[in-house]
Each structure stands twice: as structure tokens, then as C-alpha cells.
Length: 190
Ligand code: IMP
Ligand code: MG
Image (cartoon, rainbow, N blue to C red; front, side, top):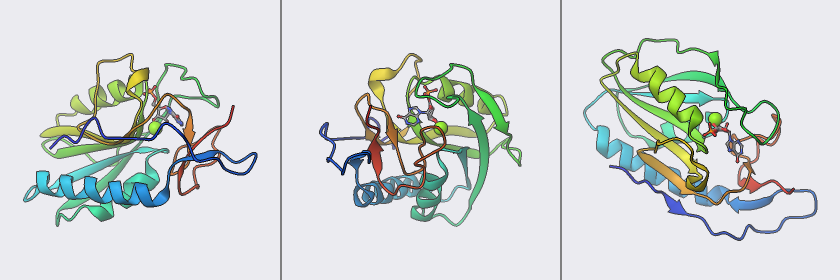
């Protein structure tokens, strides 16, 4: 297992027309990497029931694609909602639960599905909260990782892409609740 630290992303984003965020990771590139992650997770959990827990709202598109790239018969899905960022680019450092799990995870193999691992504050909070509910096992997959920003000693078991310290949007990620619908991961212009 453990594809971390993830595929390294080119530091030069593709320029877009004025006003549009530049593409950092194209939709095709994301799709290819999601297929790889799905295959890896399939291998690691073969023969075991697995619960994916998507973190709302950022991980919804990633979870939808990842779930379809995992070839396991016994796969279930739940969501946990958290808010950290308010409406800006800087984390408030305060994690607020906006939606709890619908089902118990006690005694179940759980894979937390996150959009991006930044300072690690949200991740740390989520892992602690989920561990307290005594799953059989707990691992995490994140589409994006910004290792240079980490303040907490956490890492994901599966990482899609390691990216530089830039604020990105698209493929579920937002700035002030906008841009989530973009099919590529893009860098917000200052
Ligand atoms: P952390 O608690 O600092 O690790 O932040 C994690 C959360 O902040 C993520 O789940 C995102 O919702 C948000 N976040 C961090 N970096 C970015 C970014 O570059 N774009 C959009 N959201 C981000
Ligand atoms: Mg998030």
C-alpha cells in the first residue's frame, strides 16, 4: 500500500485566458491518477468490506470518481461535513462539524477520503474523531497534498498528487464556495 508522497506536479501551471485560474492538473491527468489509486485500494482491501468516508464539501467529486475506480463487492459510503476555512484562503485553525456520519463505523475498515492535506489541522481532527469511534482500521486518501505547509505530524496513506504551496480550486475545491465544478485543478491568480 501507501503511494504517499504521491505524484509530483510540475511547478509551472498552464496559462489560461485572463481572469481564469491556470491549470495545474488537467482532468485527464486526474482521471488517470484516480484509476491508479482505485486499483491500489482494490488490491489492499480485497476480500474485506470497506467504508469510504468522504469529507464534505471538498471531497465530493473525488469520492464519486474514486468509488467507481474501486473494484470491491462490499463497498459502502458515508459523509462527514467539516468547515475550516470560512470564506478566505487562510485556515481559521478551528474545525467545525457541519454533518455527522449516518452510520456507526465500529469494527469496520474505514478509508477517509479528503480533497487536500494542507496544514494537517483538519486531518488531525478527523482522524482523532474517527479513531474514537473504534473502527477496525483507519486509513486516509487525499487527492492533493501540500507537504510544505504542514504544521501537524500527519500524513495520508494514499496521495494523488504532491503540489507546491499554491491555493488551488476545482475538482471539488473552492474559493469562497466558488469554482468547485471545474473539471481540472487550477491555481487561483492573486
Ligand atoms: P488544513 O486543515 O490546513 O489541512 O486544511 C484542509 C482544508 O482546507 C481542506 O480540506 C480544504 O477544504 C481547505 N484547503 C486547504 N488548502 C486549500 C486550497 O489550496 N484550495 C482550497 N481549499 C483548501
Ligand atoms: Mg476539505
